[in-house]
Image (cartoon, rainbow, N blue to C red):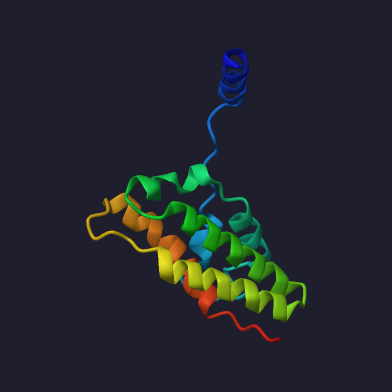
Amino acid sequence: MRSGLLACFSVVALAGPVEAQDMSVFKGCQATPIGAEGCDGAALAESLGLLTAGQMRIFGDAGMESFAMLTALRYAASAIFSQAEGEGCYAEEERTAAIDIWSLWVSLPQDAPVVIQKQFAIYSGVMDGVINMEVGC
């Protein structure tokens, strides 16, 4: 068992550090409606879908529900993708799930460090875009 655990740690160590997410897509959609000039919906859906627990860990370290945040953003990715594929009913279900999870479980602590506040503002702006998405079933 111990050798298996060591092998697992060795693989993780050899893989190197997790690359930082390119925030330009998120920043472009922070205050711009999804699909409008400056906020490419397909790129946003892909970037949201590629978010990892490791990238959300900073929010957990600040006392936030980082797993709920990641889950909501993943549902948002699915909603955006489904809408682009013409699956409005499915997009609405995914959008509703994203909004429900975000509104129930995700909140910024008042004493969060400035760096967390700034990072959160980006994702919160993206979620505002998801909330305001036009979807039709």
